[in-house]
Structures are given as structure tokens and as C-alpha cells.
Image (cartoon, rainbow, N blue to C red; front, side):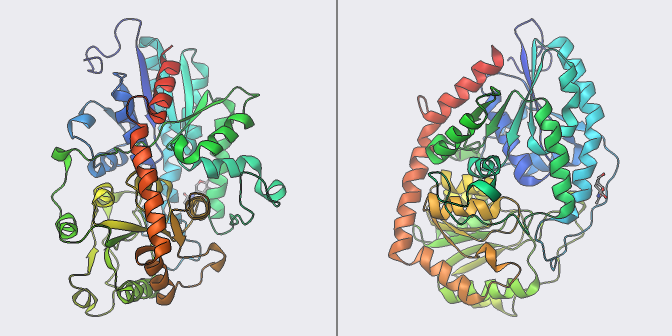
Length: 468
Ligand SMILES: *[C@@H]1O[C@H](CO)[C@@H](O)[C@H](O)[C@H]1NC(C)=O
């Protein structure tokens, strides 16, 4: 096989791919999925990161045939230890600032990545670096090597990238064909420190860029992919919508045996709302109580993943906060509600026929998984690109309702608001229409990765481009 180390880079014909993910779960996961897709074209893939983050990516992958990951070369790099404070549930800005030391520490990958690129560049005909847009400072060596090309992976929606490219402040104040009038402000989306971090990565990105890849599908965001293509036509930068990166069906043998899936088996089609806010959200106790009450009062079935945000090193967890649920809560929802506290197989839950809605923070990884599995969203954005993804989901694609309006700021979301959003999505004609649209979109997105489908064609065009 072409991707075994002993034969990997012999002969002149070889192209190798080096993935440089950003060390946060939604990012690690997306590039791991993309690695699997590229590997299926018999192109060797090196996935580089700190030892702990590589392990995190591997341990949490789900939805694949386990053999598929075996041929990815994980290159575990030593970086100096970094501080791993717990998240702060009462921070006004929900951005996971406790991860900043881990983000900063990733700059130490620059030296080992340079060494790797130099070594590969001598052996391979062409080295293709695909790096997260937040890792621009790590791949600077690539510029100096003649047979290395670098592609930026944009981990967010094409809609979000388009908005940034367009420049919110001046130009979209008035109606136009692409963007709705009321775009949520970026205020409260990032910490000042992370904004500086972003800026420093993007300066590096601009210097050396052969193209951009997205975890999206033209059937979902075709208008924004066209928009981006036009924006950068002069510079000749190409954009590929290679998504969904996640598998579109769960192979039988990779299915996990989990209690929450058995629990779903006992419930009727589309009767359960799955509630999870990803790996970078920590709610405070009062908010947890309001959410708990709202879910119960909605009288809808739910599976709720109640976790704090990841720490910088997920294997170093100092334990979760004390129990914040109201006394006796789980007994009071027995049979209708299930609270899960550990890692949940999200893609499998979304693919389960009983799941008919997803209350989500609208991180892009979660949005793509939900879209793929045809599940409409109750959107409760927390930070980063999430408030704007909410606009895409609810106003443009019309496959979801808003739980929390971004303009509410750091006000608590009351149980009444939760209850009414859940009922609107799960038990109303309007909700049924959204579900129908989401199901139809899911079906076409799943079809897009099959032979002749639009995402398959994008992937083939990208593969042809990097191997020519
Ligand atoms: C991260 O790096 C920036 C820039 O060097 C520095 O100002 C900041 O204090 C660092 N933050 C942490 C939490 O290490």
C-alpha cells in the first residue's frame, strides 16, 4: 500500500500531505476527518501535533471504521508543558480563555514542523501542508522550500468567512443579495487576547497561501463559496468546499455500545432533542438550573450532555464542578430525559432516527454534523463564529430556531425561553417544516459525497490540483 512508511515516499511520483490542526476539539476533529478522506486517495497523510492533542484526536474519533485511522501517521511532537487552568463558569465572555496557554504553546510546534517539512521536502516530489487558519505562525518554513505548498483550512462556515471578507462595518449595513440586514456584532465573541492571537496568525497566513479548504458543501453554502472565489479571483487563490468531512453513514462495526444509544432505541422517530454545547462551553450553576427546568417543562424527550469545557490537556482533567442540577432532577425526568456526563458519540446520536432536533452552540463542526444527519437546530450561540452561524442556520437555511438572541449579551436564558424554543422546534407545525427541510438537505448532502456528487467532484478537483 502506498501509505505504508517503508514504501511511503519512494520514487518520484509521491505527494505527501501534512496536516497541522489547531489544538481544540472541533478543529482537531475536522482535520482528522479530512485526513481520512485524503488517505482514501492513497496519499500518505502526516497529522502533527503535541502528544496530548494527537491522543485526544484519536481517542475521540467516532463514526469510522477503526481501520481507517490506522494508516494516518500521527507525529507526536514534544512541546514544553503549558498551564491548564479549569474553565471559569462565571466569565462574562464565554470564549474559553482558559485554553489560551495551550493555544500559545502550539507556537512551539514551529521548530519540529520545520524539521519535518525539510526532511519530507528532500524525499517527496511535493509536500502539501494543510494547516488550520489559526496555525499560520507554525508553518513559516514552508515558504522557503521549493516543493512545498500550503493550504489554509478554514474551520468555520463559508458564510462567516464571507462576512469577514466583505467587511461588516461599512458595506453590509444595507440589504444586499448575500447577507441579511441584522448580522450579530463580534462583540463578546472573543477575548482581547484571542483577537490578538488571531491577528498574528492571519498575518502569517497571507504571506504564503496556495488556496483554502472548507468543511462545507456547495449544496449548503454554494452562494458563499462563489462569493469567496470572486473576492480572491485577482490573487488567484482557489477555494474548495470539501465537506462534509464527517462520515455520512456510520459503518455497522464502528458503532459504539453506549447507554444513550440504547436509550434512544426506546424512543419514537424524531421525538428526542439532543442538547450539547460542544467542548468549549461552560455554563454557570444558575444557567444550568434554568436549562434543566426549561427542558423538563417542555415535556419533550431529551438527551443532554452536561459537561464543562475541555481543559488544555484533556487527560489532565481536574474533575468536574460540583453537581449543579436541581435536587432530584434526574428522577423527575426519568424516561423522558437523559443526562450524560461523559464524552458522547454525537454523530451517532444525530444519525439516530429518534433524534429530531439538536440544541447546539452552533460551532461549525456541530452544524455540519447536524446538517449531514438532517437534524434541525435550536441555536444557542456562545462565542466565536457561533452567533453568525446561527444566522446562517435559522435565517438563510431555515433549518432552526433561535434560543438565545446574541443581543441578550450575558443575561441569563430563562427556563421559559428554553421551554418555548424546544416546543417550537419539537412540537409545532413550523418545527415540522424545518425538520422536513433539514431532512431533505441532509439527504442531498449525504448524496453529494457519492460518485458524481458535488462534494466528491470538489474533492477530486482538489486531489488533482495537489498531485499534478
Ligand atoms: C499568549 O501570548 C501572548 C503573546 O505573546 C501573550 O501576550 C499572552 O500573555 C500569552 N497568554 C498566555 C495565557 O499565556
